[in-house]
Image (cartoon, rainbow, N blue to C red; front, top):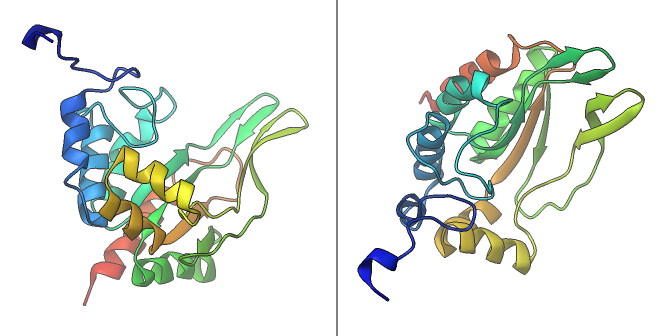
Length: 202
């Protein structure tokens, strides 16, 4: 193959050079920093996101999510709060973190109205907390662990990142934090950031 024929992007349009950087990310801090760069538009590759950039819904909260990633929460999923006729969303964010950070995020449920669900490493839990509705239909729920527990799940993460990070995620806590008030957008992310900063204190 001639040099000019070497592919630059994968089939999803993600830059292969950006993917290569993830091969070196072996800590939650490194994964968080790379995710922050992606949210800020500095990278076109994010593991498990099969598009070169974030979606329209994420862009208004991308800056706040980047901060969370730089303070100990490697985010996986999120959505803003929305109320639009019969459709509504609760704002939420999920991600991987250390046990100490999970403890601080869980404590949010004791001092605020926010709800935190914390899944310990190896826990294959499943629940259904509605966070998106369209009319009378529930379209998105939280409450299930996303820790890579099964061999196939670990392999999927390893393919998208590297073996070391996949095993680290399997040994990390997975947390889901949601605002119970439908459509609200100005409480959750600042509170989560404050809790993350508290977890960083000696």
